[in-house]
Amino acid sequence: MPTQGTLYLVPNLLGVAAPTDVLPARTIAVARRLGHFVVETPKVARAFLKTLSPKRVIADVAIVPCDPEAAAIAQCTAWLKAGIDVGVVSDAGCPGMADPGAIFVALAHQLGAPVVPLVGPSSVLLGLMASGFDGQHFTFHGYLPSKPVERDRALQQLERQLAATGATQVFIETPYRNATMLEALARVLAAGTQLCVAQNLASAGQRIARAPASQWSTALRATFADKAPTLFLLGRTPA
Image 1 (cartoon, rainbow, N blue to C red):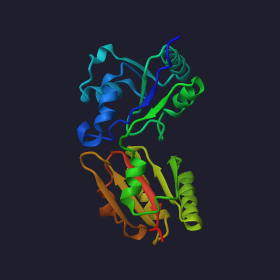
Image 2 (image 1 turned 180 degrees about the vertical axis):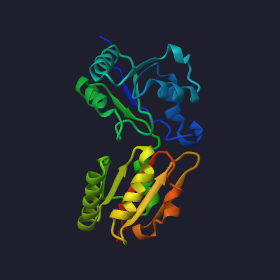
Image 3 (image 1 turned 45 degrees about the horizontal axis):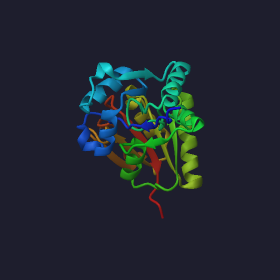
Image 4 (image 1 turned 135 degrees about the vertical axis):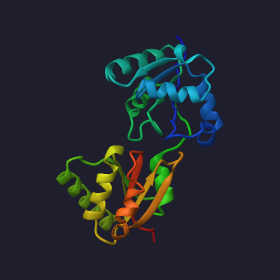
C-alpha cells in the first residue's frame, strides 16, 4: 500500500503582484512541484500557477474544480489514497478562508493524510493588522445579505455586537457592490462607529482608510468604489 499523499493548502495572490513579493520561497517551491490540484476556478488557478514558473507544463498539471463537489471529493480521495500530493487553491488568498477548501481538509483528516497549510496572504488577517482594531477578538461574517433591507439590518446587528462585545466585525462584499455597500455603511452606522476599509491588500493599488462613519464623505467613499476585492471592518481601538 502506498503512503498517503499530503494535502497542501496553497495561498493564492490577492491581486496583481509579483509572487516573490507576497509568497515565501517554500510556498512557491511546493506549488511549483505539485502536479495535482483541487481548485475553485481552473482558469484562475492556471493563471496563478503560470506566474510561479512551475517545473512542468501547465497542460500536464491535473486540475479539478471544487464544483461539482462530489466529483472533486472522489478525485481528491483517489489521489491521496494513491500517495499523490494534492494542492488546494482558491481564487484569492488562503483556501478555507471564505473560499472552498475546508471540505477537502476534513477529507484528508478522515483519510489520515497529512495536512500542510502554507504561508501566504489572508485579507482577513492583513485587514485586521492594518485597522488598529482589536485583533484578539473578532468575527468574520463573510458576505452580508445583498437585499437592501436585509443588508441594513445585518449592519445594525454587527454594530450592536461591536458595542456589546468590543469584538471587531469583519465582512466582505462582491466587488461590483462596493459603492452600494459604502453608501449603506455611511447611512446606517452611528456617527461615531469606526469603519476601516481595506482594498487590494498586498496588491497593486492597495488602499486602506479608517475613520468614524460620519467622516466617510462622498469623496472618501469614491476612492474605494472600484470593483476590486475589499474588506470592511467595524471596530474600536483595544483598551
